Amino acid sequence: MALTRLSDVLWRERTLLELLLFKLEEEQMILTSGRSRWLGHATREVETVLDEIRSAELGRAAEADAVAAMLGLAPGSSLAELADHAPAPWDELLRAHRDAFASLTTEISMLADGNRELLAMSHRATQETLLSLQEVHTYDGSGHAAGAAPTAQLVDRSL
Image (cartoon, rainbow, N blue to C red; front, side, top):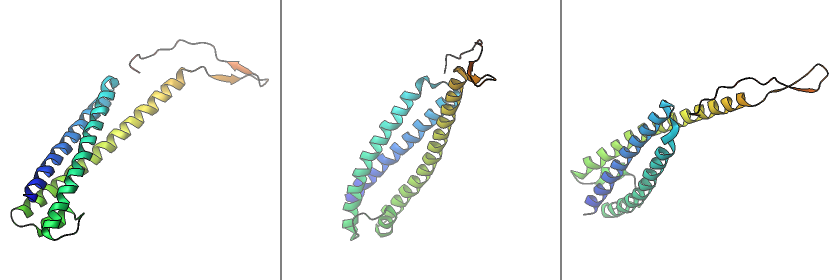
């Protein structure tokens, strides 16, 4: 029964990781489209899934410790260690879960890094645009501040 409960928790966690990957891809589409209207919603959805993953990780840790005790291993044993000591067919199932977690984690990490980079670029571009809209102060030949002549400005309302 302990192995069944652990497998159920692992399936739930895999589903959540896939959902996180989907939400990060949604966020990336919003970032690359240049339409930031829904970015706040997308970010909140990512945070919600992350909270669910944290809860699932606690359940996994408890179930994994129960399986470790059943197999005569120390609490906190890795999924690979559990798979090495589990009877068939559980050994293969635990290895499959471990491989899926490694793959999903790599994809999530790459996508999250890309999204952070897109956000940083967007932030820099916004700052540069805002700076270009401010009045520029220069100095005249005598060292006194001289304001620039007012010029027309074109503002993109989507910023």
